[in-house]
Length: 211
Image (tube, rainbow, N blue to C red; front, side, top):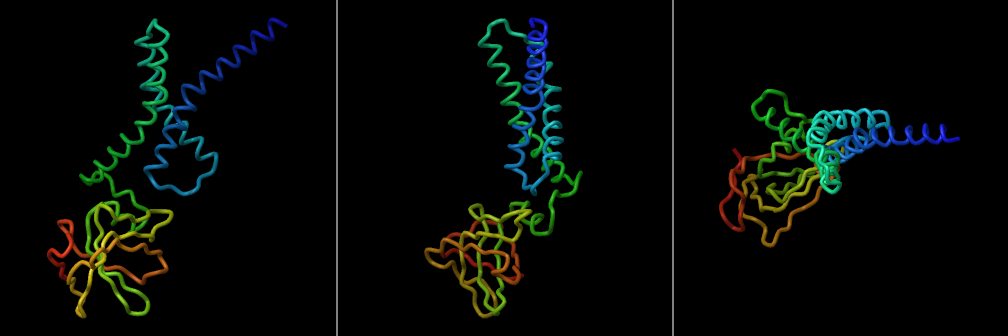
């Protein structure tokens, strides 16, 4: 009985160690990554592979770090374990995303967008917009830092923070007083024109003309 108990304890300890080193950090990284990078629904198999990849990346850095320091005090060892297997995994997605954006900015890799809509709004530039509807109506709008455009897999939904008056020629006249913007779904509009906006629009100041 003692032999079986000893084997069971070793089995549990080895699996717990694997969980702490690979599985837990991997799923922490994957969860953070899914919050900052839009993704479709994925199968459990794909999730496990991605989590293992993140976990392996973290283990390459964290295990040597933890082993080289090897603190004697229990509280210091616990703090180092939290850093190595919880905090570091939470930081990897941000670092990877930053590196990818940097490589995209210098044209080393193409923009990681699923469609033209995503590619446009991933640039995070401000725009003046003319929104056209099926019935021929059109409205002017300003898309700035407070505006939101949904990305894949829900591309097409948009919130613009300010509405503008347009004249009969489609020129921007002035901002609509007290405008808090508008939310639009993909089926609400026909198409959108985008105009350059180098500085944020302020109430009643300046106008934007179609180029």
